[in-house]
Amino acid sequence: MEIINNITQDVIKKAANSLINGHLVAFPTETVYGLGADATNEKAVSRIYSVKGRPTNHPLIVHISSISQLNNWAIDIPEYAIKLAREFWPGPMTLLLKRSELAMGFITGEQDSIGLRVPDQSVALALLDELEKLGGLGIAAPSANRFGAVSPTTAEAVQEELGSFLQTEDLILDDGQCAVGVESSIIDCTKEYPVVLRPGAITIEMIEMTSGVNLQLNPEKSDIRASGLLESHYSPKAQVVIDVAAEPGDGFIALANIPTPAGVVRLASPENIEEYARIFYKALREGDQKGLKKITVLQPDGGGLAIAIRDRSGKAAAGKGTLR
Ligand code: TXA
Ligand code: MG
Image: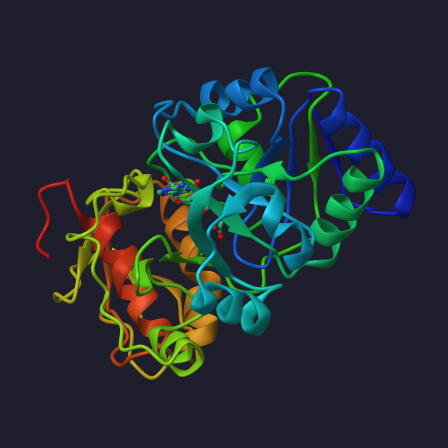
């Protein structure tokens, strides 16, 4: 596996060729780093599952270069989904749509829907363009972490997560820190109304404004399977506890205006919600690197992106016998 950090057009060509030849390419998006494979190559896609250690019935998001590629992968697209795509692509939003013939079971986890997204990141878009020039139709990419672990927001974090599972010819493209820092909003567009399955930087308020529909954040009522929807996910090795008093020796993540309690290890002091999202996963990783046993997270209040941060911190805390 090679990590490349000076991403020239030649590097993009090399990476697109690697994908077409069935290798894996980890690449930056504006949300988190993805582990990419040619979405039409079953063998390459199956390697994503083994490298991540992910159950094969968990579907993958296919990344496409623009809205014009939608019809390759999806059928019966509702009007409101087109509106959302026009408004927010490229951007941190995944739409679940009824799948086309092209979207086969090895991508969709044998479900009838396909997840699609146009990422808003120059390296990702250049890679998609180059792949299409070679006849490719999209890049299947989950977050580039081991199953259940924290998503990587830097290339170093990808290497730490997956380095020992990748093969010689696989690549990691390093374009620095991801701008958003939490995974895309996932919107189920297979029903009459959109349903937000995973909150993200395209917020419920933004979706309501565009679609003209009142939304609920409603994973329970959906029959769709999404691994990010498992109660416990996005977990570091340290135990995560939320909105309780930090104890000496804990890692501590809270907005900058909250003072550091005595004896704790401050892992992050974001000034605002956007910065909180951007550095949250990195801060959890730092807690692990420092060998901390427990990380106390004080969640941000309010709507918008704060909802996504509370969703991820709640999932990081779940399943380890912690307070919620
Ligand atoms: O921001 C993101 O979405 C990142 C970057 C790399 O694009 N990707 C990402 O992928 O977070 P992943 O696989 O780690 O999380 C996507 C979630 C998973 O929980 C998956 O099960 C769900 O989306 N998903 C994908 N396609 C689906 C489908 N057809 N039906 C239901 N759930 C789906
Ligand atoms: Mg993931």
